[in-house]
Image (cartoon, rainbow, N blue to C red; front, side, top):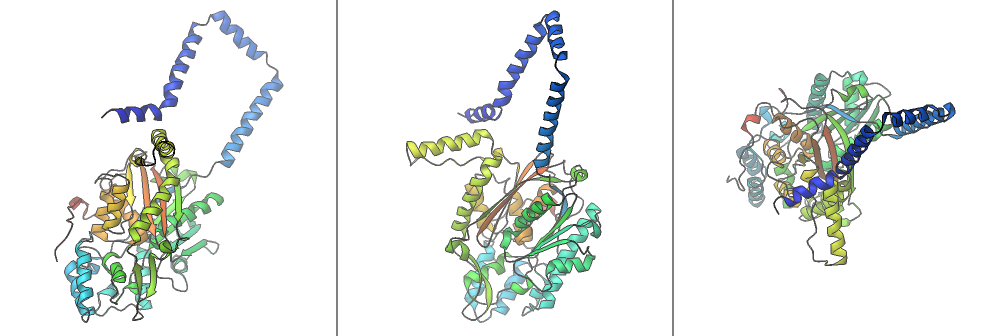
Length: 484
């Protein structure tokens, strides 16, 4: 039984090769056995064809090839990306976080104790960062401070990606910025246009309120735009601005984001130029988006609102993990047929038919996505999110290592967390040419989005990036509870 499933997978996944190779060999042997006179006769019969017939045949082949290449989607390449790394002055060790909580919530010791219990079990480490405005006692969430945080993160990421790729501001054709909770006027995308003096005909978009999965929504939007605008570059910025969203009330469901969310951001350069195919790191293969907003529970499970005292915060519902699981099921039902090998699809189909016809109590077959991907980047929304996906997708500890270590080192950086995880895999030297990466993100609404990338070239261990000075320490053991 140990070798039965691998043999089945090999047989089904290589069925065409196993059929065509014997047929080709048989035809080759038959040709070699042919008498020279017979071969000469066959060749002469080809030469006797009417030139008009040959011309029509060539024209038909040319027409088919032209139609194929005209209808084929443009290849979208990820040239390079950069993640923000906050200065050490922004770090928030557990002791600092708890001391500030006690001072800010001095009239509500139960809320302080609740935050301590959450932090102990969060999976975060001692080096996560919060913006300077949150370090003050009390915090000073002013508009100027929020703009300052946005400029620091976004401009740092853009400068870094421009330095890596050599792209000039005038070469950027499409700009997409996503930030859920901070939406000033003028927009963050306008702020970027102003800073870098981008062209007046740039196609600029600013996405807000779309949660932690907005990064992949931005990638999907960029892909659609690059399909209709040839020879273009798209710059995607994913971030979350913490300054104006620190909750100072006492509602437990609204205190959770204080414990989990931290500073972070990423800039990603995409291109559809054929000449970028060699230098690009990855090629975009699929983007699948699932939206469960038609269901009231799903719509309200991550909800910005006022508490009874009028203080604004994000309410995280206790049903969040159940709703995330349902959204994931819908998403993998769509993405499965696109990525899974034939062996897994057949097993799933056989089980489904068996449950419908023979016995509804049969255990449903969970496809082995490890057959489709070498690397998994699961949104580092919290320890429970990673645990649930590891269990549902039957992944090993190594498959979720990038997500756990990103949560430990940087916290929940919202839509940019997927890029810190990809950076972790690269920093470990694990990304090889041809490797397939599955990015999975969850966000308010409720949404589950997936992106599939294929590595274009073996990635050398980067000499810069957010993991540069700490990758040698990882992976680290993360206890279930860190006593504070």
